Length: 273
Image (cartoon, rainbow, N blue to C red; front, side):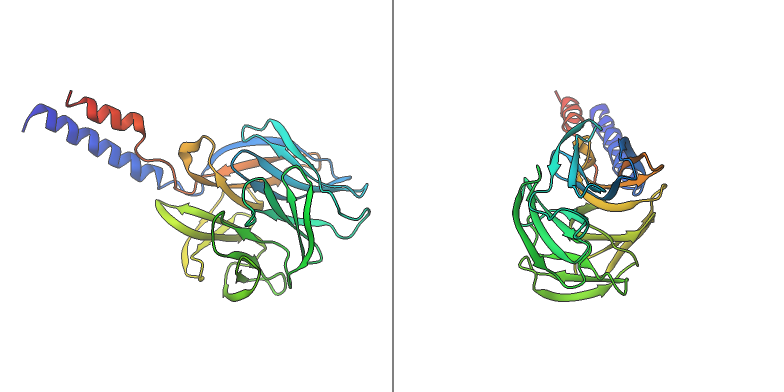
């Protein structure tokens, strides 16, 4: 066996080991950043990750409803007040996620089960669509379905069309934290993440259990979106309020990291030059 071929096999084996390691760390924390939200008067409700920002949904005792935007490195950037909401208490924002309108838009669910559509800077697009027992939802950009956990009793996730016609439901972990991802543990498709605090379950769109794992800190709300840096693929984002004054946003590995980078491929090709 030639030295060049032997060296290629050795490098290939190393890359294979790297691939297994990358997909074997589901649930581990990749990064975190600190954010401030003083309670009272500010209540922190939900988190959303899109292609460029991390958004935290909040309201305050002055009757303001808003989203705070952050770059994934923790630099505050973007967001704004939610336009069109009536002043005062009810309705209050409860969850935030993607919608079929795509980039630059979010859906916000209030505590009465109504869905409001806004731009990511807070401008109102549409309001007042009632969805029975809706308190949280998830949508994978470009997907065919919305997913929403049944608020009462907990333990059921409903599957809707993109016009919110009910298609069916499946049993899932109790709690109303829910997110959707296109990558999980080396696989590509559509996966639903549901759970409560640090216990996470992963399902197919029709409710088959794919996996369970735990995150190392308590979580308050889930979101899935692009990893930071991008080679992590799709990752899980959540926040936890450690004190009334501040909390941390955490990024968690879903086993979707790039296993063979262009640089690595270049090194392999260079063996034959």
